Length: 181
Ligand SMILES: [Zn+2]
Image 1 (tube, rainbow, N blue to C red):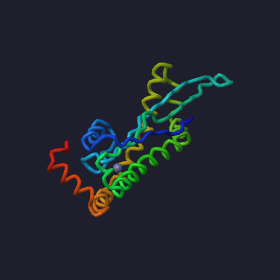
Image 2: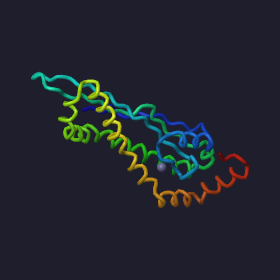
Image 3: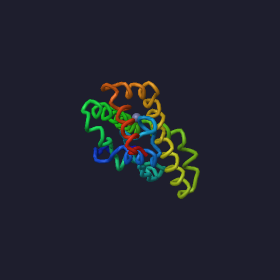
Image 4: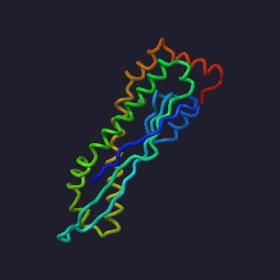
């Protein structure tokens, strides 16, 4: 069981419309409720390889990583350093959730597959590979619950209140200008 390190890019070129589209097109939780002020995207990647160990017994080699990891902050927030920093910090928290989950994955998934080892080795090699990949992606995807917990009602209310209520005021202005999706 191995995990590749998490690398990511940051992008603050897209406006609220663009960042909202990113969030709505992804399976990830929406941030800031329905409008995309920030977005953190990470694509799960799993490589599975069943081998034989020195004694000829089946051994599972598994590598997990995140690909195309990107943090987007809506360009309109650059008008207010306080709000930009606040949304950025929120997205960095999502990134930290991914990073911690990834770092814990070798041990966690090792235990997960230990419990399923016998039933997997009972399958023919094609089914075994397919089922291992399916299970690995399901298990790796359990991080979703942590993002949902973090994007709580209290966190949302807090985001509305900070920086002299810049965020709700900005959204009201963008709405009046017809610039919200
Ligand atoms: Zn969020």
